[in-house]
Image (cartoon, rainbow, N blue to C red; front, side):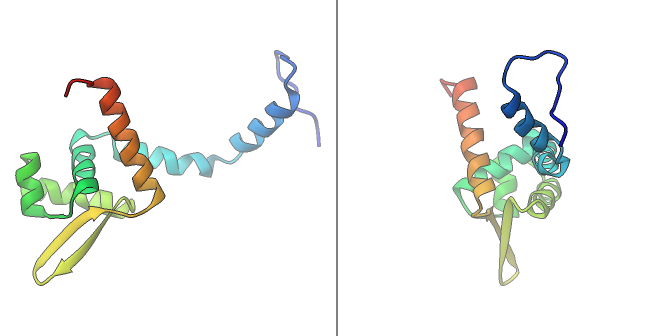
Length: 122
């Protein structure tokens, strides 16, 4: 294997080799990029954050975030397709909540931490 040769040498050859290996796998970064694209909409972030704290139906989510039910349903479809939100049916009613995954938990913590840093007096 050829040794990596960067234009500016700073004496950290092994670290640079490891970084180059990680960067050579764009699929690893695509999942992260997809999540950030999904959360580029304030409404989806608000809905996701809400569902990290409770399980709700579309009508109640709509009332809580002050949006129409069709708009909320649109956002829920995207969140559910990404695996960040799950649903369950009870009779005719469908209830949504944040998925119990490491990605959802980490994203929830990140949102709350950024809100705390950006809006400390909210």
